[in-house]
Length: 124
Image 1: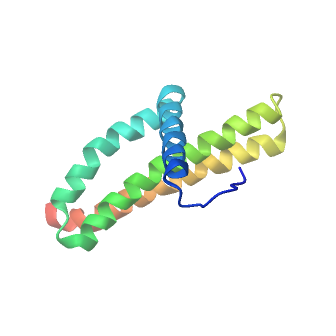
Image 2 (image 1 turned 135 degrees about the vertical axis):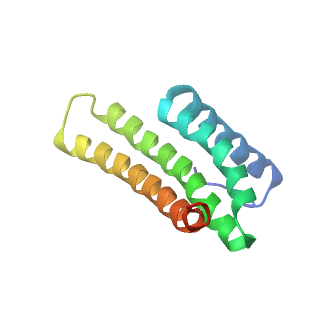
Image 3 (image 1 turned 90 degrees about the vertical axis):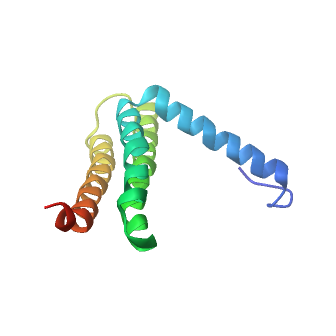
């Protein structure tokens, strides 16, 4: 949406915040994967903050978990747009959905890698 006014206008910031909350609610309401990952985030973020030694480890444990949620929302947005534009199967539509899913998968691998490399040696 083009803005005509000052970009730092508190009303515009408030509207942007409300749109973001609306997106989070939509993710929670319509996407089972987002709900599961959000519940894992509620568990993993406090554990990561507790288990990390120093700020860098804490960031390395928490950031990938939050990134998973972000990319899951982007993947869901891609899927919604693809379904709206072309409800019938098309190879490119399937490829777009698969690539979005792959992005989420790669971040989940990153979560496992970060947690394993940081906490694995301490716990095993």
